[in-house]
Each structure stands twice: as C-alpha cells, then as structure tokens.
Amino acid sequence: MKKIGIDLGGTAIKGGRFGERGQLVAEFSIPTPARAGRMPIFQALFCAIDKLWTEDTGLIGISSAGDIDPVNGVCVHATDNLMGWTGADICGEVERRYHVRCIADNDAVSALKGELAFYPKAENVTMLTFGTGLGGASLVNGQILRGARFDAARWGHTVLVPHGLRCNCGKRGCAEAYLSATALVKQGQKRMLGLVDCKQLFDRAASGEAEAVDVIHRFEDYLAILIDNVRTVLAPEYIILGGGVTKSAAVMQEIIGGAKDVVLARRGALAGVYGAIVERL
Ligand SMILES: [Zn+2]
Image 1: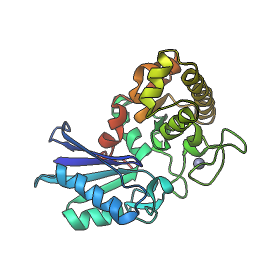
Image 2: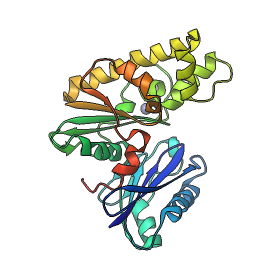
Image 3: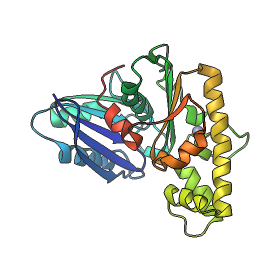
C-alpha cells in the first residue's frame, strides 16, 4: 500500500510519499501558516498532501504538534505554536477530502514510533524533539504513555527554572522556553548581531565566538537537567534526540558526549514524517 506521511509543525509542514516497501520516494515541504488560524493551516496541509498524492494512495498519516487523540484523530489541545488548532478534526477533514483512511498522532509520539524501528527489542524509550517547540513522548514497558488527556510525557513543559521565561503553554520556566530551536535562536539574538537560525549559532560557537559559546553552554546545562529528569522518572533504555536542532549533528553528538543511553534520531528531522504512517497505538 502506498502511504503519505505528513509532519505538521509550528514552522513547516513536511511530507513524504512512501512506496510499497515503505521506502521514501518523494518529499515536499511548505511553511506552516501557524498564526493564521485553523482553516489556513488545513489549506496548507491539503496543499502538501496534493503534492504527494497518487491515485493508489491507501493511507494518510498526520504527525501534528499538540495533544492528539489518536483513536479519533482530533487535536484535543494545541498551544499558540499552532493557533486555532485546538479542536481540529484532523482525520475527519482529511478523510472527507481524500476518501482514504487517515491516522493522526502527536508529533513527538510519531517521531518516537518512527525511530522505534531501529530499536525493535526496546520497551522503554523516550523521544525529545527540538523544533519550534520541545516535544516529548515516552514508551513505557512497551506502551506509549498517553495520560488522561493525551498529554503525558510532555517533557518540554516540565519546569526547569522557577519564575523563568514565559512558555507558549502559559506557564513560566518550561524546558521548551530554554531548549527549543526557537528559544535557542531568541537567546542568541539578544546577544549577537545578525543571528538567523540555530545552524548559524552552532557554527559561530564552533568558530569560538564567546557569546555563541555561552548560549550553547547554557543549552547544555538545561539539557543535562532534562535528560537527568527523564532518566530518574522512567529509566529508559534510550533517550532519542530529534528535531531541527539536531541537524547540527556534530554539535549535538559533542553535547551528548559518551552517554550510551542518549542517541540522535536516525532519521533526523524526518523522524515524524516516517512515524506518521506507523499504525501502532
Ligand atoms: Zn510550557
């Protein structure tokens, strides 16, 4: 069966078409109109699906930011990283338009499901995705941790700093406000002229620019706390780091150091696209 996997994030909608043997045969990406409201987000999503569509498509999988009810394919709650997305009937809208089955799940859960292909024996794995936000998902004793409102294991919204920076979820001091790609660039921009993105920040740190090095050191400190919290609570076999920030794989590898239980997502920033079509609940 041919499948389409879409990763709907706060910055971009990335999609892939998969062939009969699960191989990625085409990719497409467009910016997310994240602040424009629900209908424009759906229109952009449909645009991405249209580009990847072939008549023999049998399944569309959507990996979306926000708390997603995977049984009904509905977004139960989303922060302002996707404005108006709370209540979106993702699978209902997709199925009405394309007349094929749709599955949907949270983006970090999808990334986790995608990466689990590389760890077939593991029963305890946590995924952290560093993008517009900081996504989290955990496999515990072979089951994906869901919680009562589909918002369990949201490691990005565990508080690291009392009275700290305001987070998109409304709380202060969340890990997301310090460790997401957005947060990293924002902190860099406060101190460095002309900084555009994370890659540039990592490059400037690598070339020894003191302000950049300092921002990265703080990132390492907060990341170390978060990883320690995950280890303490769940004692997983692996903690997988994914998302846009990990595109600078060399730097992330250095940050991880010799820790054997912390690994980079094998599919990098495409983990969610692959995981979107994995039908495990
Ligand atoms: Zn938060």
